[in-house]
Image 1 (cartoon, rainbow, N blue to C red):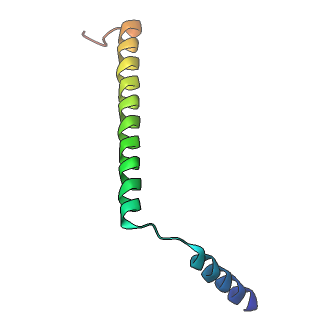
Image 2: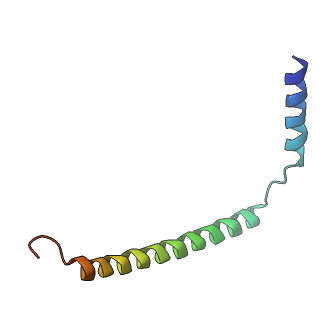
Length: 65
């Protein structure tokens, strides 16, 4: 039981060290993440489109095309 109590005490000690971001910081971080996600979506979409075109050139347009 003492090990559980020690664990819980350490958890609460660590939680006291947590710094909660301000509203402005939170909005800023959210905007940065959204922009990054949009950039990655664009890169992946371009790669998908490019590889699709290359595969059509190499293997043809498929059955009946």
